[in-house]
Amino acid sequence: MYSYEKTFNKDAEEIFGIIHKMLKEANWLILSYVDVKEVFTKMKTELEPYYILDVCYPPAAVDLIHDNEDIGAFIPCKVVLIQHGKNTKLIMPKPSVLSKEYLSTDGKVAEKYEKALIEILDKIDS
Image (cartoon, rainbow, N blue to C red; front, side, top):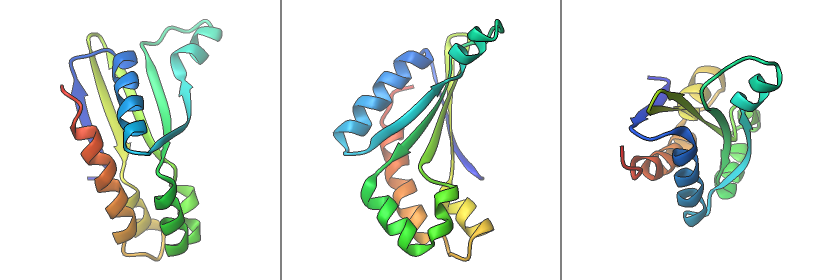
């Protein structure tokens, strides 16, 4: 499977806040995010809450870039939150799969940090 996915019985804003807090506690960063609903609203188009987060663990970036400098095409990690009614779906494309398929790596370095991020995300209560 190319991505990690999980569904929560919470709204996207709440999940966003929980993720922000948990990542900060683990020394990960949300480098940036896009509030897609806000963008759509400016275009007078309706959309439920939808966030695209760029997530980074700086030591991972060092290791990944040393493994293959082209990994920058797949990092920082994307974490997408899509709200559907009262539920929110989280999707994170796996850098290990992308690096194996598109770069000349075995994906082991990417997998190490991907697993660390998934461990953090798995701690969020559904």
